[in-house]
Length: 415
Ligand SMILES: *Cc1c(COP(=O)(O)O)cnc(C)c1O
Image (tube, rainbow, N blue to C red; front, top):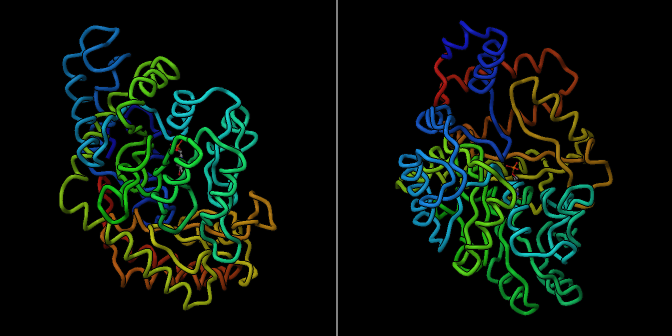
């Protein structure tokens, strides 16, 4: 792999090859990560990166657009078909700028928005006070019920009636349960708010019909394309026709210049892959694997927020194990199991040293791992957490992990 880079720039090559090894020899449990196909990789690394194409298909500011227009229109048409969306903008560089574009398109600075608290599973772009969203808008934050770990729609409704937000954001970064989109729609209607769904984490499960879609109910829906969607890094914004002009203007020229047509080609290819029947099987298996893994962890006395999962994502509180999330993350890293430390709702510890870990099954399911492998993963996690300082135990587990992983090749990696 990467022979040209090897010859020209050995220091970059060395780290790229080590990263390819890390990806193929380890178990990737970060729920926002995935492995893209060879075709998506090729598009993303293609000559399309050479082209400037400010504007939209048919209305560009530079010449030479006859090919990128075809590609961008295909990306739009496939996204519309996949999600049943009225209008799609495929140009956002990533999820955070896409959320900024949605707010910029539909709100005035200082307007009130409702979003989920960060330490309850919301995203930094959903009103973190030190983030742009938190500074530019008046965010009112709802939470999950501390007992159940689930959204409390009565509390959401009460806060909405009190604060009369112009927009309500649903869709999260660390929430393991299905979302009642209709209930959000009803609350938004009751207070006259725009309903905005951020399905960055679950878009692939929604596209694969393994979870209910907010697209029919919500005014605007944003998703990243690189998580369960299994496309290149990037995002899209879907909306009802009446918001189309405002959304497009906010993306370009409101926030961005030239779109990354190499990434847009990758998005088009990923949407094409997601339209195939195999993707439905993938989405279902992601959920089955997560449910199985959750149950195996609970059997080993892991406390899961909401006692399980409906999605690809699991959030565990390690307090009863006497191992903080950070120590767990570091020890697991050493055996080749990658996940992230994470806050739990109302975490008594700090975000840099929280009580929990967040894990998920999108990437390992792409490699073809199923229930028998989930049992092994649960066992390894359990052994690592009980042996965070036991060098020989960790070395032994590392070998077992590598041995299993090499039986499940990663798309695009040939070592
Ligand atoms: C990942 C994520 C984003 C942001 O995506 P980036 O591409 O990392 O900027 C936004 N919202 C939610 C809910 C996410 O999970």
